[in-house]
Image (cartoon, one colour):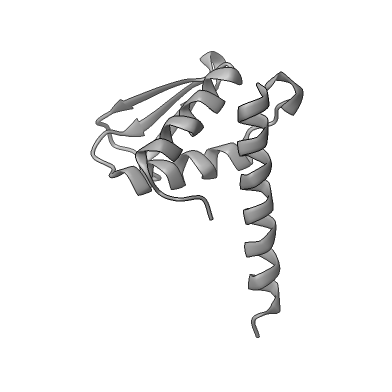
Length: 98
């Protein structure tokens, strides 16, 4: 898993910007802690979430967004690959547990 720090959150925010999404932190009645306004590529996350919850929320959203990784900068592409590696490892470990 990536570290749950403000630096990692900033990297995720940059990654989303490069994908054409705007991230806003606002209060609201979100059942899942976030809302995606798909027509406008806007992600709204509960502003009361701590850094770790914001990161986990963005990672959840990232798994559901279809995009071409070729639009990412070199730094963001490496960061995205790291995310993919960790999620693959976690999936394998979950499948191995009885």
